[in-house]
Length: 434
Image 1 (cartoon, rainbow, N blue to C red):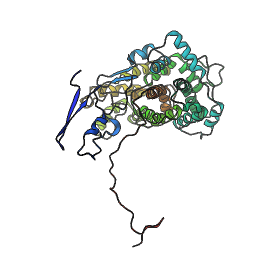
Image 2 (image 1 turned 45 degrees about the vertical axis):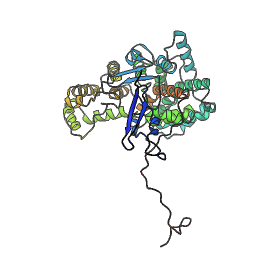
Image 3 (image 1 turned 120 degrees about the horizontal axis):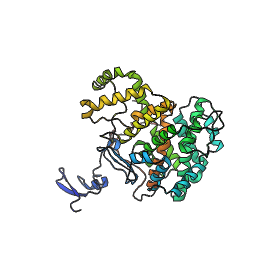
Image 4 (image 1 turned 30 degrees about the horizontal axis):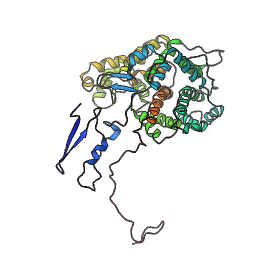
């Protein structure tokens, strides 16, 4: 299209500049030509937290926050959650297309083959204290896999990348389950190759003395849906960390560990635990109106509502709300669900929240489901990391294939002192004496 340009007039010099617009963006480097004089560095953009900066081109996940749309490779999240398994969606995210029946069979066999972890890695886990946080154990163990697979440093080899991607996707549930067993002092359970991805994870978590663990199919499917919903979410904090570390050509184990470390923060992967704490603080349905008033007065926060991207109802929240109902038919109804439903009802009708576009997000119901299934809140972020590994690795592989990408190196605006000098008479380790 013609006229796809932006004209900027620099009022300092009265010069005008024409910058090309492509895909609704201008290149930040094009601003460097705007200078006061020849010695000037040129203009930069200042964008704390990357609120309005695109750092890459990606064909994986599409989000329209105003309309509440989330798609993986073009497919609406609603359709994928209803009709696909997690490993089907993982294949889609990684390869761009849903697998055929033959491709799916081969993919499942490949992932299943790599679920075991080396016995020395188990010994590494045993070195943690009994009360070590599962997320710290997961991050450290994933990073340690870098020493188990030294060939992973060859990140520019596409076939080598595929092998490491499969290894990570396969081993993440095993490591996650072992962190859980470690915290309870239980022996580790080997993967069962006859079970599906989520059922096998549940087997490694909860198998005790029974000869064969049989996962409840409703709970296994619920976990599968939760994994699908958490598989990728565009350039969030942890994905940005994956790309930033990966841009140095660090191996995928170290890059994934960095992404998981970013996920561990309460503002990212730990948000659903904050929802549970809020519901416990409220205590009962009859106290919800009082809590709402405290929110409006700025005394407390309404956790699980609002999102950096979504200014409409988070499409994942609708699916997870339905999933919660299925789970509670098996586990028994949790009073927290009734509180959450009432809180959502009031918030969606109250002008204060409607005006601010504060809708429930994916964290609002996920923590309630996880707790009903028997997970300690300390495990919530670990559960998040298992499916998000697919998204991280897909983004990392995309980064490796992108000729435009270089090592990440943001600019800064220097606010420190100007040049200054040490006092006359200063000697090694001794200040000058007046």
